[in-house]
Length: 295
Image 1 (tube, rainbow, N blue to C red):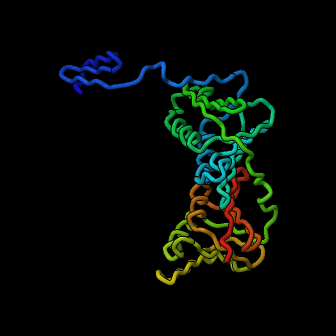
Image 2: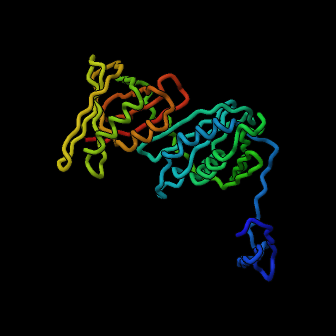
Image 3: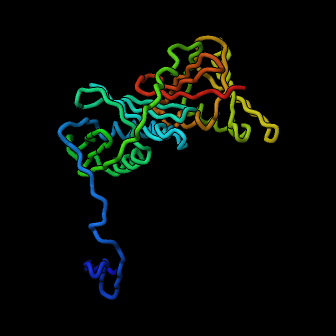
C-alpha cells in the first residue's frame, strides 16, 4: 500500500482496510466467539533473569520427546525449589538438565510440566526482547503457577498455557554417581571429529565408537559402514581412569555438544552399557546424558 494514511473499520462482519486507491475487505468472526482468556492469580510468583531463562530453556528443550505415546515426556519439567529452578527434558534416549538461580520465589517446592510448544514460544518472545532498553526489574520473567495453568510475564507480554498432566519420571536415578573414565576435550575439536565420523556411520543407527585408551591422553573416534567405508580420528585429551569405550548416536552427541557453552567439556563414563555424561569443564549447573547403543 502507499505510504499514506490507512483507514481501518468494521462493516457487516468484515474488516475494511482502505488507503487511497487500495481497498481490502477481510472476513472474520464476531469477537464474542473468541475463547475467554483465562485469569491467573498473581499474588505469588517466581522470578528469574530473562537471559538466564532464555539460555536454560534453549539448553534443554531440544531433548523433549516428539512421540505422543508418553505425553509427560512431551514437555519440559520445571522443578521450583526455594532458591533455584531445575529444568529437565528427556525422550528416554538422552536427557538434559539445567539449574537456574531464582531471584525470588514462593519458597515452596513445586513441579510442573510445560508443553514444548509453550517453551518454544516463550523462547521466541524472550529472544525478541531488547534487554538494553529495559530496566533491571523489567529484565526478569515472572512465572505464576496454578493447579493446571502457568503464566510467563515479560516486558508487558503475558503467555498463558495449560500444563501437561501426569508424573514426570524420576530421572535422577539414571544419572551415574561415579565414573570409571573421565575425559577432558576441546569442544569444537570434538564436534569436528564427530561430524567427520558421522559420514561413515550406519544409516538408521547413526553409531560412532569412542574409545578411551588408558594412559595415552587421547580419544579415538571411529565409524564404519559396508557401503561408505570407515573413518578414524584421534583427538588429544586429558584422560583419567581406566581403559574404556562406548558407542553413541552421533546426532544425540552433537545436540549436547552444541548446547554446552564451554570451550572444554568433561565426558564421563562407566562402561559401554551405562549412560555417558557430558558437562562443561568448570560448571556444575548443566549436564547432558546419552544412553549408549548396545552392540
